[in-house]
Length: 109
Image 1 (cartoon, helix red, strand yellow):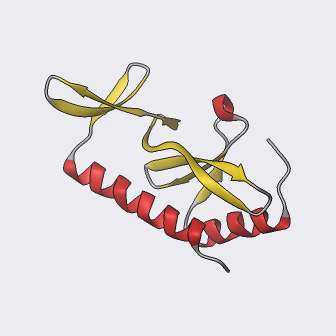
Image 2 (cartoon, helix red, strand yellow; image 1 turned 90 degrees about the vertical axis):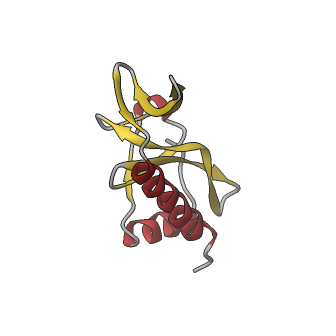
């Protein structure tokens, strides 16, 4: 895990105050994981004063980042042999998570 500037630490603190929890995903040691509820994302340090979302935020399965796939005309979130359907409710929850996270990252304290 890289060292963070005071500005980046302030961003992480602000995220925490908004209900996001900083978590570690061992396979992604160079990124900061954040989760809220059943959703999570990876944050990449950008310059010394900010973060950007790395990759696509996802639904958590067994505490792990999943990928969204299409199978037989339906969408699923998958991690290893676990999978759940990407229902309209789950997709709406994930979209709200992404909106909230983007808003928090783009708000200057």
